[in-house]
Image (cartoon, rainbow, N blue to C red; front, side):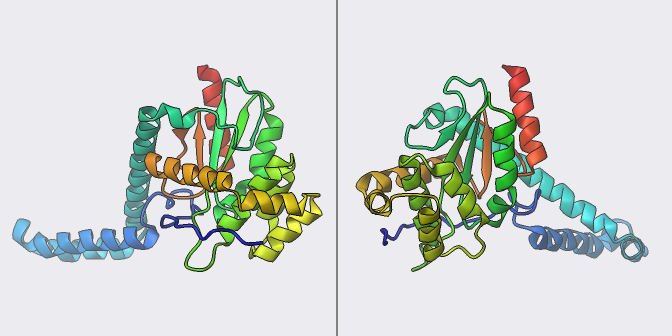
Length: 265
């Protein structure tokens, strides 16, 4: 089976609860070191004496201080990105309206809706997939919406796009959730593995091929990409609970957001 080659935004996979929204621990450490270096270079002009030597000696004796600087910066970046995404969601309420093309589970009139943007090759997405399904099972009164957002393809490698199309084709045959779980369980996902997952889960291959290649599928994925860009999403997975995102993908934080949303409605 083949599918059109998409043009996707630069991806970020969220696999560290605080580094997903920032430039990563390496960049933060470099900044911390640069700040300390600048302080040391200016110290003689500001304080006189051996202030710089004392600071250096303190940092050498207490290297954990630099870790605290890094963590504070990463947390500040995460909080800033959360605020920007939440503001974008509030400014574009139509993007949060139910889309019949998206796989969703739970009451249509649920007081709480959880939306996940994900890629089948994203390590963070795979890491939380099983817990996400458990959250669904534990909260039948919540609506869970799946936004297949393939952003990890590069060049001629379009496996993420192909997997998303295949899963959505399975959705049209009422077999989405089992295919979602099987694809998330695949390490080193390939097109051959995607085809095998469809067959093993009773998906009609001729019907799936037609859906994968259809203009409607092109429009659906294009709309998801547009939504992600409009909301300023920076990586996968991203969770939105009643229009507000979480600063991490930790299942405990997603659960806390669900419970908070229930209490607020």
